[in-house]
Length: 469
Image (cartoon, rainbow, N blue to C red; front, side, top):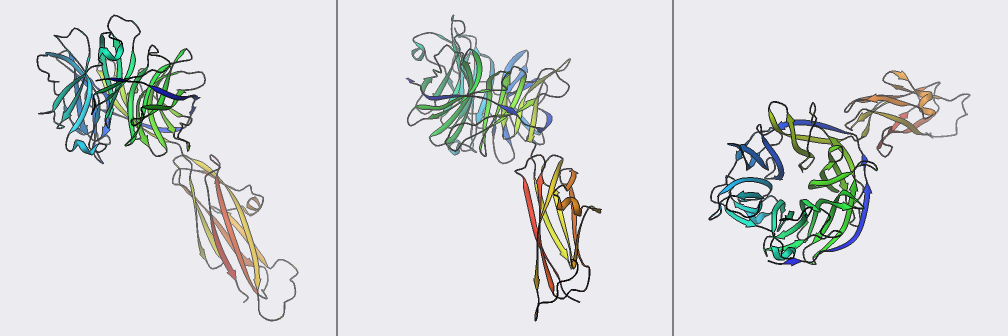
């Protein structure tokens, strides 16, 4: 085993902004079962890792089941090592064949454990084997003293695994405030000690996400400019380079101490974080140049409780624990659906009448501003007829039965508030004021624009034809 040098290229710091979102909470797992990590198992189930209480001791567990239904099976195997009497354990993270096909029907779990014969406190481990925990292989992984200047490592806490890597934290025996983060390569047993502004900045690495064969993103926290701040950093195994190191704040005045978990999604990453104000869920976009964008935050707080942690995230579901007085610890899921505007405009015609339907396709109540573009053309055979004394056509508009002709012409017509999925009907009616000498073709486009998000708009076009009688 060897330690590899850490190379950091570029440092960026961002304060985030808050986005409106609908958050749906549910309780999952049994009483005093605490969730710490999650990884998808197949299209409908996940593996949750964590711990439970058994005969007064904390022991590790994983759970295979459905987040949507809450139905699943708990497994709590005891880490098995020759000559060691295991007394306690916590399982922090899992990986599955959904992300690493080489696992086949097995899963990989990482965590920490203690045993009575040890001269230090917490040891790290990897489990690779069946999901039922029977006949799998348990491997101890402890940060070696050779990687930390010959010191004795008191605690090795592997927090997350994906692909060929494990990330976590360690600290030194007899040395206060010596916590730091590590990166461990499973296939080569190589250790990298993170050096973000030094090795004494209490750096943590709680999550890792594999972007591709040679690309990973690590989530954690470190001291930066005198404060604990969450960070993301990219890692390229083939070069050993760490790039795009970026620190994040919850707001300009509220700190964000560290990220607890990360999951890749379209356009970037969802993260779960611990802030000075509690748990928070965030989306961080990936910019076109490969850097990280500004985070959009949603506060997470289980209703009716005073303490809610944010410990892991899967797709758009944040997870953690809350405390029920007189009952104990409960784990929860928080499904986050950011507020989003959307609109669709369709049209149907019947004779000299057209009905435009404006539908709110977003997930929030919204008002839509309406505008019109109209063109009237003539067609006839023979000599040009005499110009009529007044406009031969009358074009009117009604919105849900109310006349809005003048408002539409003045671009002040609106649908009023529409609930998600709700719609309004704008009816265009063309009538002849007098006998027409030639055919009239009326081409109308109606555009609807969200009052919440002007980038969300849609339009529909119709052609009506009025012929001489």
